[in-house]
Length: 516
Image 1 (spheres, rainbow, N blue to C red):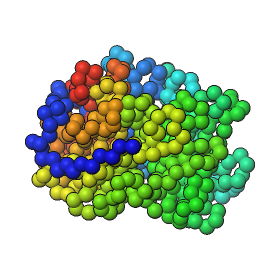
Image 2: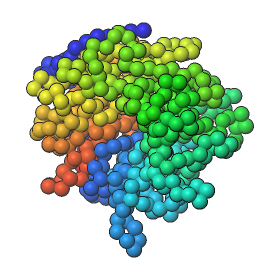
Image 3: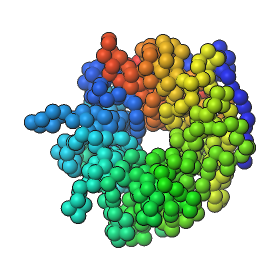
Image 4: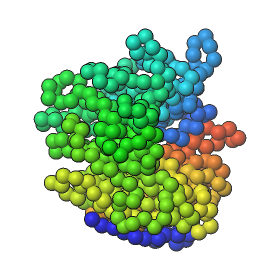
């Protein structure tokens, strides 16, 4: 176990020479709604909430998906409704990156998509990508937490739903969808109004009896426990579709199943994260509880056993001050040289003088049976001296990827409310690079609009860093970083956009290509 205690109050000119070198570039790909054939709803803060990456059209390049849960959708014979959509920007081999002119929107008024677009559906509130049907094409999982579900003749308001759009080599995403059921096969669990299933979704590689399959994971943070714990939360897992007789098909896990410490208002499932590796039965399901500010981790999903509960006070060393949000932001990555995925967990907020802490939680080696604290970056204040503390209190997003091609993942941290170039909330993204020992604060990079080759200029309320995602969008074997900028303007009109910044094998820098 490794603990790192370090206090950083970084003025702009205090960045190390290595970090400054990482900020050099030649421009970047910038997708702005309405420019050319770029799709998306400019009134719905494009790039604000969630971005995902995966190879949906099987061409070897990752494609870009952007959720817009507040997008307005045209309804034939009536007014547009604020129901939500997902914009897909597919990569093409000829272009060597995502192509804005090929972008299109998915929503519930398309042929083949169940139900119809309705006000408050929030289609695209969360999205995830994985090869659910194991056909080598990635599939798109879309959460719709505001969906009203009909069950046994009753309409369950905001019960929620999850759609799985299957990737296809010809059509990018085939016009069909699967819906996570409203109840399990044994009827031991039945959906309720206010469950908000799909508030968060994830894809998880699972193993059972040597058979691999990608499971769909969905949180129901508004679910009431049968014992009377209102909004305690629940997580659903849809596994194999029947091709493996020994694989679990469906699991619905109550917060109380995981912990006797669960309480009303925990809302377990509000930010699910799941992953696995090639070791049979070796997978992890994690979600924080906004109510009690704990992190529930479950390792054995089939037996629903082996839970671990983490809180800020349970980690070492002892906390130096109260932090208001523990584990609200999670991501996964291979941050150490052992090739094993672990969780990056962020604590944020709190009192002046203590802003963030980053914990890496996972296994120290392949034979380990439990998770533990692998690294802690405490009292972490990546803030220019002239920036107000308040603008750095809350982190908007996390993403992990190997941006420098050294075989170890790096951590990107988006802080949309910060910004010293043009005023409040222009936004920053910080990248902490990794090495075989873990994250290395000596290799810190700061990204923002208007400097060091990144297109456009920093402006008030741009929100650069609102959402993040990593993927290999140009097929060079090195991860790239997508950054949401929901407040991006064209003239006086707010459009929203997504920056795409490319990684490189040549050096620990992020290099960029020019497009706008």
